[in-house]
Length: 114
Length: 112
Figure 1: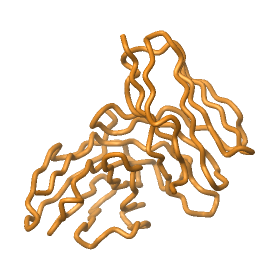
Figure 2: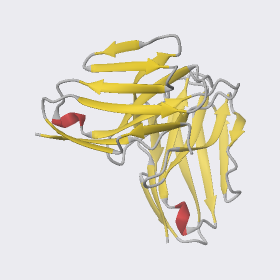
Figure 3: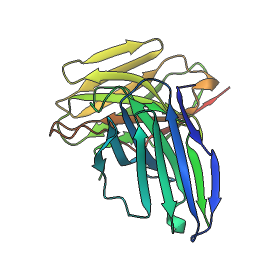
């Protein structure tokens, strides 16, 4: 276990549904990340939060809405998704948002959009 | 194309053999990290090498960095079936942006 948990582990949703992904870290870190991993594509950084403030939004469509209520929790709210949004969504954390820090990843949420 | 690209895309070896994976990148970096991912799981950090380092070891792992060629290699010695996974390099870029950029990975299959 890496100290980063994600729920749910699997999610199937229709294009009109609204759902949320949850990430929690028990490491006392201050930076949290959302990544998207699609088949045969590099890991894509979506959002970065550092001390609860969003520091990076990598041109992510507005149908993905992140929320970081505190340094331990990170949510990704989903609405009106497209089938191409089906992917593994990974949450990660690090002590703070510095590139020389190791990132600790959760197990991911496998999302299928029908 | 992305900052870090691994080569080969897939590698199949027998248990006990060594596995070598390469990573090439385009712009100057401060450091390079290697991660491992078991199928459908999260990534696990393996090793970090700084731009002023040329080689680093951790157990059966050996990482080299050649900044003149903008490349790094990950060597796994005496491979085991449990080493079967995808391996990714991650680089920062020396432009002030602090996020890591991951490559597409090398899928390693170690046959028992």
